[in-house]
Length: 300
Ligand SMILES: Nc1nc2c(c(=O)[nH]1)N[C@@H](CN(C=O)c1ccc(C(=O)N[C@@H](CCC(=O)O)C(=O)O)cc1)CN2
Image 1 (cartoon, rainbow, N blue to C red):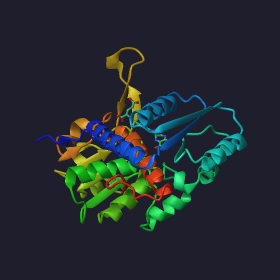
Image 2 (cartoon, helix red, strand yellow; image 1 turned 120 degrees about the vertical axis):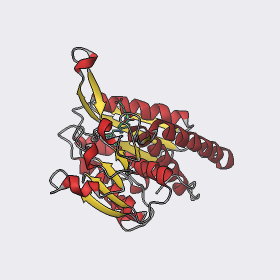
Image 3 (cartoon, helix red, strand yellow; image 1 turned 90 degrees about the horizontal axis):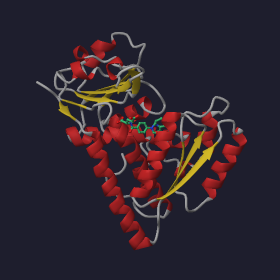
Image 4 (cartoon, rainbow, N blue to C red; image 1 turned 45 degrees about the horizontal axis):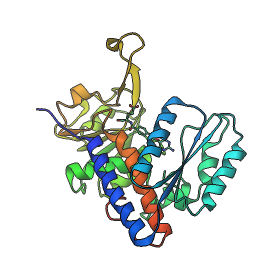
C-alpha cells in the first residue's frame, strides 16, 4: 500500500486564492490595503530566493509589498532603526526580518524590537506566550502551515497521538503548542531522545523538524500514520552530474510512503505553505489593526 501524497503546493495555491479574495473585499468595503514589509540583511542565496518569492506573492494577492535590503555588515542599530520606522508606519501591517541574520547581530534583540501586533512570523516573546496560554496570537508560519495540512487531511485532530521531532523555537515548540490546542496528545522528541524510533512508532501524527536528511525511516512509522516532513536539506546528487544537488526532507520518503497513510513530499509539501501562511498572518494582522474580525480559517 502507498500513502496519499499531501500536495502542499496545491493547498498553498488554494489558500493564496482565498486570501486574494479577502484582500479584494477589504479594499472594496473599507479602502484598506494590507501591507507586508520584508527585511533581508546580507546576501544568503537561499534567503534571497525566499524574499523574492515573498515579495512576488504579496503583490499577487493584492497586498502592498515593502522590501528592504541591507548590506551584510550593516550595524545592528541601523536594523533596529528600520524596524522602529516600520513599527510606526500605518501602511505596514506585517513585518518580517528574514532569518538567519549575519553573525554580528542578536536575533532575539531584533525580534523583540518588532511590534508584536505586526510580528507576522509569530517569533516575538509576547506571541510565543499568547500561543502557549491559548490567547489570540500571531502563529509562526511553518507550523501553522503544517496544522492546516493536518486538519485538511484528517479533519478533527482531537485525541490523536502526535510526535513532534525537533524542539526549535521556530517549528518544534510552536508545532507542539498548536497540536495541544487541537487536543492531541503530544510528545516532543529530539535528536537525543532515547528510543526515538519506538516513540515515533506509537504516533498517529508525526511531524519531523529535526534538520537531519532522511533520519525518519519507514520502519519508524506506524502503519496509516500521517507524516509531515518539515526538513529542507540540500544533499549531493551525483546522478545529476558533477556538483549536482537535490532537496530531501528529514523523512526517508521512499520507505515511509509505503507505510504511512498520508505524507508530505519535499519539495512541494510544507515549504509552499510557509509563504501562504505569511500572507494569511499579514491579512489577520491588518484586520486586527483595523478593528475588523479576521477571516475564518486563516489562523489556528
Ligand atoms: N523570518 C523567517 N525566516 C525564515 C523562515 C521564516 O518562516 N521566517 N523560514 C525559513 C525559510 N522560508 C521562509 O522564509 C522558506 C523555506 C522554504 C520554502 C519553500 O517553499 N521551499 C520549497 C523548496 C524551495 C527550493 O527549491 O529551494 C519546498 O519545500 O517545496 C519557503 C519559505 C528560514 N528563514
